[in-house]
Image (cartoon, protein in one colour):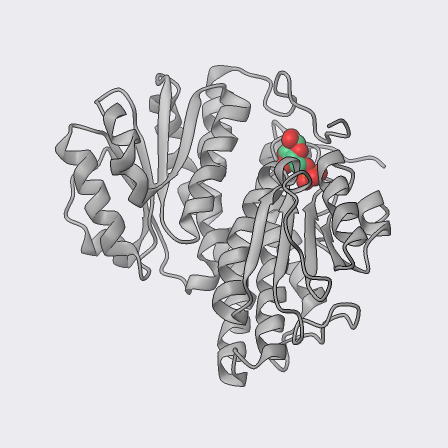
Length: 368
Ligand code: G6P
């Protein structure tokens, strides 16, 4: 299978810019854009009947699953048990055989994720696979396969697979909500319309923010530590931002739920550690802004990633404010992924690391 970089310097850059196209393709498989409905779901898993859902994955796929947990709980009122696969498989979690389990994996070959799948299978759960490689072991051993259709991802640091995983999980959560009667027809239409707009908004954002992210990366490349904060679905995004940065630029970074700031990381705040705050103007915005105030009051430098409403509502002085368009809550995680991907990418380029093949990391981890 031949894949080339086209006009891009690295596969990672190409894969970042491919997102509007691959997501639109992926959504086409899950959504009926004429009726504004999620397509009927697989018969293999009856989301209307399951008492709970288990999710297990590694790395970036795990963080997509964590966003998925918020969605399944909110839209489908389905309790979700989630853990990284290397813990999930050994925890001896009491699982009901009436439940279903989802395994998220780009490669479909990650050893710990596969072991978690087999554990759930032994306990009688119905198995769903959210994978990029449809012929993979994880796909083959599942009752239902939900392909993310991102196309081959070459960069070791996952980008387009992450946003495609999120897009597919969003449609599954909406579909589950419809099946369970927790999402009305009108809500479904509104959610699907937002998803349909997403590729166009992504393309616009990618065009607009590149110069800002590139100049900001010069500042980041001088730092030894970076803290990312977020609440709600922005919390897994904060962890994903930190993961991307450390993977390819080797700068130490941590992602934290904004509300936990005062229980530890606040001790680290000084002028040398930038704090990247991911805060769309959602239900949690005011709370996150008050955490930002705590950072500012201690001389911390803030990189504020928000939307137009958020920028207008916050009066705080920041090192930089990245303003994205106002979007519906369901697509915010995908849109807000773009600046954190570009920031990590440009910082790594600036530092001269091997962006597509970072040291010590592998694209697919088939050992435990
Ligand atoms: C490795 C890769 C990550 C990936 C993780 C899980 O650590 O470097 O990019 O998120 O494995 O891989 P999977 O193929 O299961 O999604």
